[in-house]
Length: 279
Image (cartoon, rainbow, N blue to C red; front, side, top):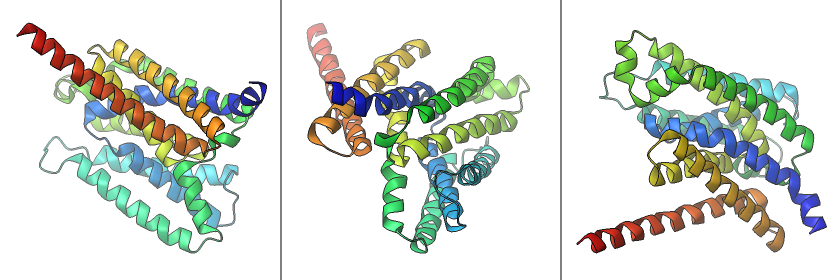
């Protein structure tokens, strides 16, 4: 037990911090119908990090982080400008194109990098097992600051996500607030990808939000369900990783998938039983 706490305490704490901010952002993503914006921004940030590596900077250096963050801000600007009231071209199409281009550019860049395959693996599944307490405290402070901004402007962010037409009717600049939303989102993603990798960050964003939306109606209850699912999946994934000596990031991703399937089947079974009982 002592060895488990020694090795897994910081990774588990990092998982909880990531769940805290990503479950909330995931509810916005689901409401906006831009499911893959996380993957796209993560891939754009990862491309920036790869270009910084090719330029001679260490992956964990401040320079690499700033270049990665600048790339995420460019992505945020593109996504805020391409959100059109005319739905003939869904924004998800633009996001998919951005992801594909960023991924292809990343492959080209990695091809020129020494130990490119190892770098690609690090980008996908991260190295959360080796996260340190100073890194956990740093991302906690950053996410608390971003969470405070979202709380202060919660009415605007939520209304634009849930009812864009009403936001337009009130005279709010949807594109401006979209940029603020995506810029803050990009800051979270850039920091998260450095710690956890693209796949784990996507799981933290989408799976808790989907579970919350599936099991609850009110926003507060969706958040509570999402945080609970994230806590349980992180604890189980970290425990399985330690017990079976498996890569932590990939194990937690698979655990999130298993939890989602189990909850989905349970929810479906409950509604079938309820319908049969009513009949």
